[in-house]
Length: 156
Image 1: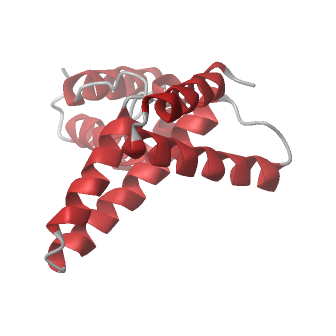
Image 2 (image 1 turned 135 degrees about the vertical axis):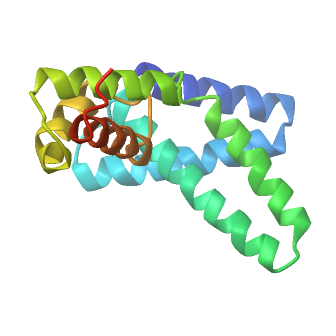
């Protein structure tokens, strides 16, 4: 069992003992989702893979918040927001937009990217460096911006 999986189990047990219904239900749902992915892949997940499951859970809850807000269900919006807060506790520290852009510029220089056409060469290296410290959308945006700067001659 990975460190993150153990931490989730321990925190779930603690939430049950403390009677923290929101944390208990959020962690139970998360552990069930992790178990489903493990069954699908036929092996235990690594910490990075668990982080991806957590990110997917957060995305699903954000989508639900939009739907509940449109339906004027503030009670459900608040419940989903509380669950997101619990899930975010298990994400590694995230890179700021500035740090991510700086890293994208650095990697772009390393792979000798000249502009937006080199996105395919930049992204795999950048994703490897960033790991689980940023979402894919943010990584892609930083890469696009760094490549646009190179194409425009604004390399810093």
